[in-house]
Length: 377
Image (cartoon, rainbow, N blue to C red; front, side):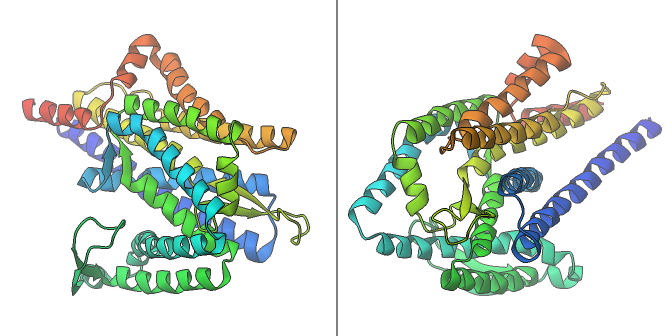
């Protein structure tokens, strides 16, 4: 029995080590990619889009593990998933009306102010864990209290205590400076840094509890994206008019004075598939932990297949876009890529029995089952 427990503990430690290594390396790769593109050499935009988006989804998936375990996330229900395309349509069309009937500069100034406030919090959340690694634990764990922050309309729901750790304080100062640079220059590097911070934060803290909910959300947004891109000018008009970090910009090798010096990728094409990809990573971990607790063989893993499905779907989007020289709804290709990867992997790994098991997966049930097994033993 002692040997079994030792092996189980070692396996758990190996997984934790992989988690700690994987996410920092993905973050470093993202930073190096942006720095190289800005300061060293221009990277082919299509390759840049594929690498940046896939790394952001990968890193965000690993970032979601700890907040979910601590219960610090916002879980989407089945009703939320059903309503999401309708709410998204209303918001999108509202922006289209604003840009059509109000001065574009005024709308963008108001939106810039809003997103800069969000950007400070997002950048602080992304930078503080990195800074904490280089600060002694006694200092990093010290909490500074500054009173109470009043309710901010559309950002916070109630007054909150204004307190932070030392790493968060320094990260906050850096975020303020960075956001100030964005407001002054509107440089594409600053735009991408804020956009990536929003993407990582979204994948980290917005979660799905089951494959069923994820499928409902993705299928609904699959048709949402097709309608607003192919059948109306709304999506493209808003994307081009919106001068705020809701999209990533990738410089082209062409003349910078041309009308389209950048390729674009909306943050929704990272965050929405990303929260599903993150679910598959946590599902793999939960199922593996339950199998170890019950002394069963390691179950089928889905995360590698699904992250590849995301990459393949985005690559298909880029290929079709270049062939037809027209804007494409990325979710038209990404959704079949990640859902197809999930269900095909299930059929290959265990047939219809495995497919039913994955379809029935609900986050939390496996952990509860493992705890019950331990208590019984």
